[in-house]
Image: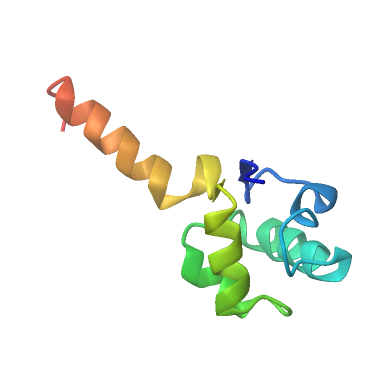
Length: 87
């Protein structure tokens, strides 16, 4: 079942619904996010203990996004500004 969650806004319990993420890995992700002021790129998660390439794949296929901090939103805002002539 696909669930949407924002990695930058999720609680540990939200992350544990993703295949391969237990409570310890979820807490590691939250701790990393808090220490670094958010996660801006999926590649950053590779530095989090317990997160593997497969974990990142599972997150993305489960509908997770980086949310308000990630490059996905940044790209959206750029396109929006360009559409309205403010680039």
